[in-house]
Image (tube, rainbow, N blue to C red; front, side, top):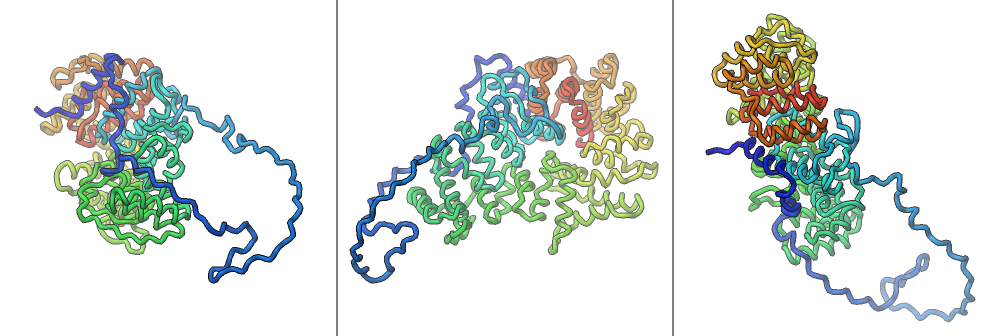
Length: 603
């Protein structure tokens, strides 16, 4: 029997919500080391360097001895009289520290507390911190919904009060670790950097290293090397120290540290990549060639250092890596636009890149002098979709973009097509509603809703026929909350075979959660469509309690737990109903509408 991601997640919630007594120790949930074998072994203590004898270094301003020959004995000089020095002024070291008002408290951690959809400081309310951490740790990213991923990212980066029973730095580490698994490398780095380094814990040091590597930013490790080396004996911190010395223009110090590691672990690819970073620093004299032969998998260490030094990673290693790497690549400023655009499919479907950012990226591809390949073709078609001309001409171009999203399998085709819908959201909004374009209305509406352009999409309300997919998406996305009749829902569910029935069940769940159906109509449709609104379990009780307490961040995390699946076909309608209802209850109705409409667009 196949166990779905959703059913597994609900089982986890059932264990957690029952009470804190059964919670595992936090030490059992620390992330696995990202470093290669041998990196977590302590280095041997180096032998003390013998004191150097001979001529001491000259004082400043006095010439040293000649480089060749034997110096002549110095001429005798009269003994100078000592000159009294001024009374030394005591140095107040505290003036080199941050003033109290500039220090950040662990009682509230995050990037910002307002604007851009971020949540308030009490977004987790009275939820238990250890329970939240374990839910984050066991959340299986990526999520099936672009809009849910966007909302969850905003919750994870918001400056929120640290929940009870958890250290603020550890809670930041857990949030950053989930963001990394979601492909949100920039957001993860921002979260770890929202904590003062004086407050770092071993867990945060470990996640911070991963965040910097995911961003291809070895220099970001430099402020952390001293503290990281004190809490961990992994050789990765020694190599990080060597890289930072090299980047600071101290090649001799960097070389000595590299040699310490090389004597124990040899010159494998992980060592060579660190050596290449050292060679990139000022005064670096190490020319290193990276060969990927024999490397069978990609780690964050290998990805981060290769990206930082411009080393091309073999496509077979990238394709076998976790999906989150696609997000890291799309956000990487070191890579050229074509490479980032080729990796943008995952970033688009997960909301890592907005429609505007995605369009700008393909604009860079087209503007490049050597624009060529499939990404350049997409970029030119996108420009044509915005160009002056008739709506019919622009629609022809849009159909070409949507239809060109071929894939090796049905799942890949669906993901690629949805990414093209995201790319063309604002181009779709330029098409004027007309009966002649009714057959394209569903795709145009789906594209606009990927960017939250609900009012632009609603212009098609008088064009789409009742019972069509376009009608269903507009019924869910409508900010004016127009009611929908049970007959319309029943008629919609009877179309399109099994896929149509699933869309009908999700439409019923979304409308009921949004309050667009009367309770009597919802119950009358529940039995024939097999949607069990009244079923209860630990997850439904937990999300109901979080909604009652007005905890939007807790609700979003629980929504993500309940909707874990490989794609929308694995999301139970009951989970969508409770998710939409809870989001609406905590003031996130806009997100609830977009998530519900997305369900129709992606099945």
